[in-house]
Image 1 (spheres, rainbow, N blue to C red):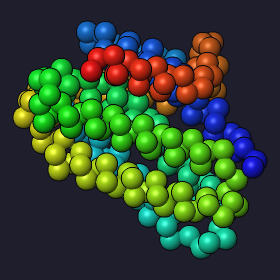
Image 2 (image 1 turned 180 degrees about the horizontal axis):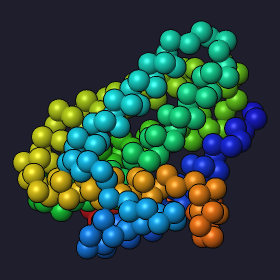
Image 3 (image 1 turned 180 degrees about the vertical axis):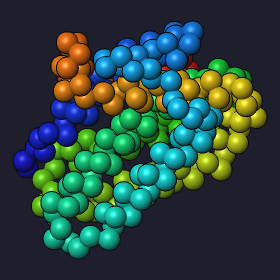
Image 4 (image 1 turned 60 degrees about the horizontal axis):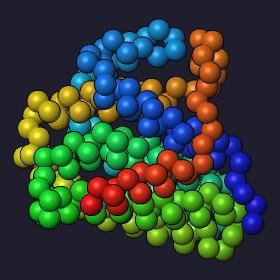
Length: 229
């Protein structure tokens, strides 16, 4: 099958720099001091808590899936275009959840507790979705299984979102408190803005664009979680 070009390099760029970018955000004492290559402060204009930001992401992805489901069977180009948007949004969303939000929640839970299990299950649900996304990235949009795979991905994400919003997010709010959620929200907003800087913008500033990387970042993060237990 023909491999889809264009999106792969963008998604790989995001995955390749995610760890370094988020690490820098986590270490920053004041997110307002971080700047993008154009010299603009990266502090979000309207800081909000982490859960509110993540819910906004959920709504955006839900709308994209709804558009895809409304397409005719032969709307191959339109379906591919929407998948690319879904892929990019989910990549960004899962990156900030797995590197900022989930670790913060997990740190407040006890081993073998229901709250800890919820966080670990969220990681595994992400892994399952990523596996299916990888298959879609390699698949020609005209393949007879493409639409079915995209529908299954939609259902996986719907289930994941329901679990997060009805169980994990309320637990996180109780464990972290308003101040910590606000701080995490700032970190998420800054990290997302940093990850969304385009190669063209980096070139204007004289800085190097993010390097390409395959899914080694995802594989390493899974290995790290297994070791943590």
